[in-house]
Amino acid sequence: MKAIEFKTTIHNNTVTIPPEYSTEWEGQNVRVIVLEDSNIDTLLETTISLFEQNKISLGKASEILGINQIKLQKILSERGICVHYDVAEFQEDLEHLKEKGYL
Image (spheres, rainbow, N blue to C red):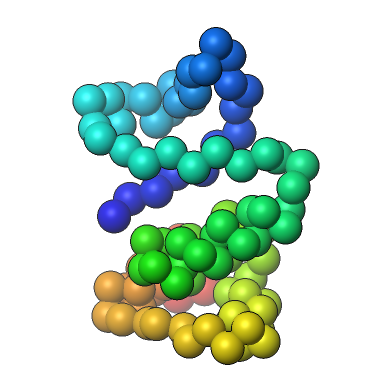
């Protein structure tokens, strides 16, 4: 599953995808979640819900929330939510660490 996050304004009931993503997503069936930008609690709850449903990874959830994975793991732990971590997520984390220059 691929996911992107971007900020936009809805005009005439239309969500416009930024040009840097439009070619990649053209013609694809997608699921859209609209969050009011000023409501961080809604963002947190929605992101955690998507994580619990295995729709997004821990890394993607922390990226959406703008917090590091350790902080997100603490939030999940406080709510009694288990962190699912498979080989694909491990490989994703390795790539992320390489991109950041840590490996």
